[in-house]
Image (tube, rainbow, N blue to C red):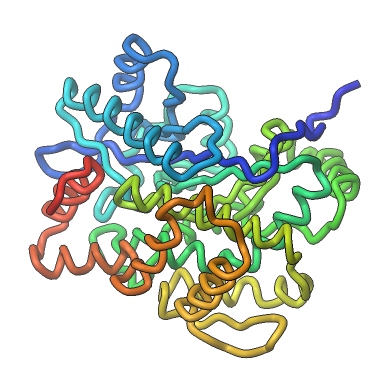
Length: 373
């Protein structure tokens, strides 16, 4: 008899990318209810593409196929965005990235008409509408459940890096939150969020899942909103801490940086996992609040450095010790982020120049389309 957590093997270190995107009214830059209409147009024209509804009608999700190279993933992302924008043009709406809309009001959102979303809304109340935030999810292939758990715990050490590099949600409800990534605060409101339990084998994880299921708390992996979670039906671990970037180039670079880190971990597994998890919430908060300038306490050395310096140290190891053939230009893109700042800082620069969140949204739409500003 099959189990919902039967692990489907996949080729190690293959990669898939999902992007949750904002649908905006071009007249004022606010979110608009258009996901079902947009999806209806796309399904008629390109039923082969993986584009689907998200929890509210102001969101749409696109997903790539399985990729092994940076160039292949970036090319497909560009195609997905082109198809999405052409369909959106017919409805006179905009599509853009960013981890949170700068001035939308959660109570105006409409839950998408799918059984799963109606269940979430019924269970979580207003949190479901507040969940109109936008993330990039990266799936990394694993050959079996044991290796998936080892990779999950190893990658957890790099969560502050991933958050800081991807951060693009400094504004919320019309104000600067003083966080580079405010989106994660919304995700943290859910009871089954945070980090996965520290179990070291797939058998232990299945036992943990079955124990929770016996209490009626969970039915599938979808019930967990962890920062990184296993996806046994895909044969992957899924990294969920990235804000959706403002460009597909940044999205592809983040994904293949994560893949490079995963490749490194297969060669030199992470140590001091239990101490790392003691520091997890503190390091995660620093990344959300201060971005690349946040502090990071290394569990192995017990030293505190900036998250930016921790990334620089990781880049040196990757360049010296890891085969980066599949990463293309992704590693150099990440190095450039350290010099120019993340997208949260870019959004603040745009607002400082325009003094308008409406203008910020217009520029975010142009950025996502690939236009040069």
